[in-house]
Every structure is written in C-alpha cells, then in structure tokens.
Length: 505
Image (cartoon, rainbow, N blue to C red):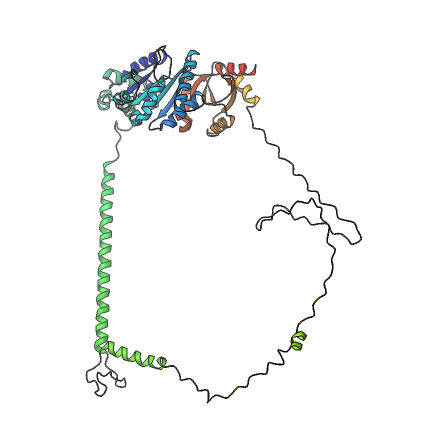
C-alpha cells in the first residue's frame, strides 16, 4: 500500500518520532489487510537500517541474523546482545537508526519475545535498537511476562477507515492503471465503501476488480461446484455397478462348476475290467463304486508297477569279470619312465640394489596411481647398477582468492552522488559476500566493494542504480525472498563513495 490514510498515516507519524527520539519495544496491532507492513516499510530511509524478520523463528537464528546484519561477531548470548546494542548505539551516534521489524509476532515463541525485549531495552539516553512487532492480536500480556522488570512497551493500533478516509484512498489509486470499458463511470463509491467495511486492502482489491471489468467481489461460478458434485456421485455409482457385476459373474461361475461336477459324477459308471475294492478278502463287493473310489482305484493300478522296483539279478547268474593286472603299471621303473626329466637349475645374475632404497609402495589392485619402475638390467661383465633417483613432484601453487576489482570501485565512483542503491549484505569474509551475490538474478547489476569498518576491511554487496529512494524501494520486489528476509538498506551513492575514498587513503 503506497498511500497511507487514516490511522495508518497517524501511526507512521507516531512511529517516526519513536524511532528517532525514544526507541524501544513497540507493537503495531491490526487485523490482516489494515496496512501494518506498509506502515513499517514507510519508516525505512537513508538513515534507517531496516532488519525484517518473519515469525516463527528460532532464538538462535534470530540472534544470528541480528549479528550478521549489524556486522558483529557472534559469541555467547550475553556477549552477542551487548555487541548488538553497542553497535546500534555507535550507529545512532553517527546519525543512523536501527529498526528490527518482526512480522506475524503472534506466532513467535516466548523465548523469541524475551530475546527481543532485551534487544530493544530502552537506555536512559534514548540509545538502543528499535523493535517493532506486527501482530493481528495484542501480545502485551506475553511480553510483560518475559520482559525485564521496568521495561516499557508501546502499543499502537490501526482502526477501520471512515467513509471519508476510504474515499481519499480511492482517489489516490484511481490513476494506478487503465480502466476496462466504462468501469470508471459505473463505479459506485458508496457500495464499494460499504462492502469494504473499512479494510484498506479490501478497498484496493474491489477497486482493482472494477478497473478490470469484474464484480466488486469476484467469486467462482456457482455451477462449478455442482458439476463436481454430480461427477463424484456418478463415479461412485459406476464403481458400485461394476462391483455388483463382478460379484454376480463370480457366483454364476461357481454354480456352473458345481453343476458340471455333479453331471460327471452321475454319468460315470464303474468299469467292468477294473477290480472292485473289497471290504473282506473272501467276499467281493456288490455296491457300485463312487467317483472318488473309482479314481483312487485307477491311480492305484497306474502306480502299482512303479511301487515295486525290479528284482536285482543275483551274482550267481552274472558272468564273472576278470580284474586287470595293475602290478606292471605301479612298478618303480614304469613310474620313473612316465615322469619327465627334471630341468637343471640356471644361475642368473641378480642386479645390485642400493642399500638406501626405500621399500616398494603397495599398489592397489583396482587403481594404479603410478607406473611400476623396473630395475635396470645388468650384464655379467658390467659394474653395479646405479640407484634410480625419484623425480620430485612439484608443489601446487595455491590459487589466490579473488578480491574486489578496481573496475567495480571505478564504476561505483562514477555514479551520481544523488542516486541511490540497495545495500544487501555486509561481512568481513569476501567468500560469503560472493555467495550472497550468486543468489541474485543475473539481470541485477550487483557489485562488491571493500570499505573500512571499525579499522578492518568490510565487504559490502550493493545492487542497482536508482534515481530516487522510492524507485530503489520498489525494486526490492524483484529480489529473492531470502535476501529480503535478511534485510536491506536503501542508501545514497554519496555515502558509499566517501567510504571508498577513505579506504584508499
């Protein structure tokens, strides 16, 4: 919301005085759509270091964000808090104010609220960090329980717009975009203001719908839900009919199989040549066989030949086989004649190896890291072989870490001193600044410049060249969400150029 009216404009005026003259902990309470975020963004300026945090967030992550944005070294909890407050006091003495904005503060844990109350603890001289909590409901009760004794908490609430204030907001946004057809002539301000019920976001949404030729409250077509409901019912009925058909088919198949088995049992008669099983050894059976008994009898006849193995032939009936005479083959003379004559040993000269030679390295069976070195072959008449001298391996030269180029500094110094840029990150580690720069889209002109901060090198990541402060603030919509959450600083090129010149001295 670029134009503040009503309680939003009044809250901006009160918070401007609070930020510059009496900082501490304050909460801005209003329902969604009343412009809390717009009021907080309006407090940003060239002399304000805005740090935005969205709850829920862990206490250690919150403290790490504060120390990184303010350029201090994180230690333990007490030491980090003291460094954050001292850095904010030093910046305020130089004319810069530190503002920490916590969105959705109703979702923050009690430990986070306790940490914020100590960060924004107001000092006697008015120095310190300003902490602004944005919440849909008041968190004063929770803050009072976790804040130090005597801590002051300021409450600011936004109320619905009156009819005159809503009309003023409509007038401010009538020329934001083209109107579709005769929507401007058909604009009923009274109906729009009554339907918005004093919510600034609802006023702007209805105004945008009317500009685009839509109803004030755009709703999806009522017939769509009806079509979906009918389709769901038809799908359920189709599945039910398919299941009933499968069940009937299964029952019919089972009935047919039972009928066929009964027909086969009735049509089969006992065979005349198949012996009937008898209950007594001397009396034959007179009742007919059933189907199961008939099948068992047939299977018994089939398996009968296989049950009794053929009788073995007695040894007396077989022709005797004479055993071969093995004594001539196992004699010592036959074995000695069958074996080859042993070869005479040949004496080979061994190469002499230097006494100081290192033991051979172990070679992996999978990867060979270096070719094997052969010992020089020595003739019998020549002298001792010379020891192989290993080739020294050159030590790799470390690649220098790239630093800020002179071209970037020259480009920044050539900018107009009245122009503005976005400072997105600051650190003493050049590699960390490069990581943040690589997160930005390629179409954003981002540069890293080296300045002196507290007597040590400080690398600052900036992006863009904008004619006015409002243009720089609007350009943040194209930045990644992670960069916006870490905070940014709209600052002039004049101050940055002065820091570069001081660093060159």
